[in-house]
Amino acid sequence: MSADELEELIRRLVAQGVTVLLFVLGPAGEPVAVAPGPGAASPPATGQDDRQRDRPSLDLDRDPPVSPDEPVAPDDDSPATPTTPADPVGSPGPAPSEDGTTSGGGDVTIEGTTAAATQGWGEPVRTDDFTDGTSGWSIYDGPGHAGNGRRTPDAVSVRDGVLTITGDSAGNTAGMAWTAGSRQYGRWEGRVRAPASDPSYNALLLLWPTAENFPEGGEIDFMEMMDPSRQTTNIFVHYGADNSQIDGSVDIDGTGWHNWAVEWTPERITAYVDGEPWFETTDPTVQPPGPMHLCIQLDWFPKGGSVQESTMQVDWVRQYALDGANPG
Image (cartoon, rainbow, N blue to C red; front, side, top):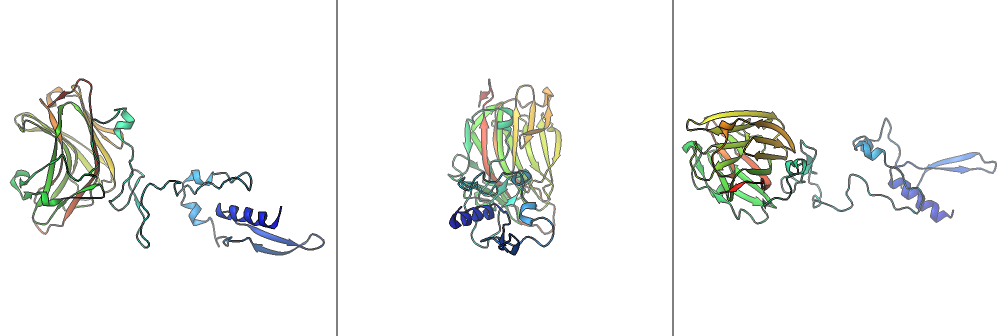
């Protein structure tokens, strides 16, 4: 092996995180000097290399190249094809969410596990990733929930394909309806996160009766974050002329990105998060009687005192057909 080939081999091994030492032998074969190879870093003073310790276990099992001529595989922490823009120098890196995916500070998100994938829903019949702003949505402009505060289009913004609804200290907030996809029975899913908030603000994904005949027309709040720390999420199924309700809850960190879904069939209503069911009812008396559509709302429930600004964000929403479903 030539000196150039040896040097190239050492550089490849160093690139794999291998510490290389060069032994210089005397005339009788005895070692007379030891030195680190080109580009090699000194081994850590104690214990395991921090970079290796923080990697997934599969990274530690990766085999080195079998020969000096084999291409070196990219580091597992750096995809061969970048999926997100590089962070500016000095900016914090993306933080992991509860489901192990990451987000680029709210501007870029990764898919995560969906109910559509785990349940085999096929291709969506409608989708919106907000790259065209809020086109196709009816944004409320009028009194807030139960007449409290105001719902205004000014509280809605879109940046880099992420929708944000902002509620201020005076109860100005927003809600919006995806009415064109109204139908009786179907599946809806949305990727949402909501930072810890003021206790006065609830973040929701819900199905609302297209006939606007609440409460008789029912309501399915399949993601309602009432907990201001966003560590518990509720579901409420409203039904009947007296606005009866059944409910459930799931403990999950709603400040990170999660995929929230509902499947509404003639036999059942099932809620999912990150592809896993967490609530289901088969009670026929709670079934909504007619077509419904998806809504996104940050609702104001004033509780007095000083109120902090609160937000919710939506990366995308999708609607899937149910065989035999009736369009609105």
